[in-house]
Length: 293
Image (cartoon, rainbow, N blue to C red; front, top):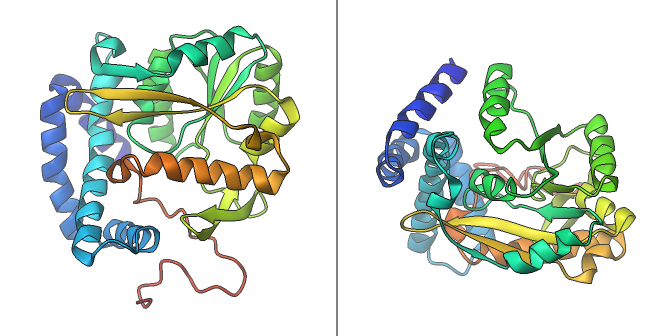
């Protein structure tokens, strides 16, 4: 059933102009806000904890905008994955691409961190302009949806690497072959696969995979993201500081600090519906408990 709804939304958004799809997303987000108590609670909790300086009214407004952006991500997919649509027609500006191209030209391979902000599927299609592009993905629980995702993402012709032990080996091989790999660095890892590092001053269980790969390979590292504009998207490429190659704990802390700086550019476009803080240090209360003030 979920796969059927997913494909129906894709076909609908494929047939509509991007601006209309976004307008429909705003209407649907009102329904999610009213009826999806789980998503609403998670979003509000995250924003209250990360932006305590905002007034309650400002926090609620940001939460509503974030849910709107999440629905927009879904309804933009049909247009993004339509083989008849050129990604250049949807991109307004690309910033920092010259330095990114120079880094690729070094022929050392490259690691790219792509946080959950804006529409990372739009970013994938921009990255697909370059040879030897691969990205790591976490498969959804519904196998039919996973098959659909792999199929539609095939437009980019990128190498899709599943996030597991075999996937890590494939990443190493791909980097040694002078390819480059995009990873969502703010994906919450399984227990035993991360460490706690500050994110908005909150001890946040964070993946170590990205930092370990950077430290081990010493390849160039970039952060990239595609922010929604009125007509399409702006894409940004930003070179990492050398801190990413430091001691593991410091590298992970730097990565979170950099992601936070990116999120603060457009916090309404970050995926606050995601339970990023669900794993807490021992002895700490549940982050998403409805009984917390």
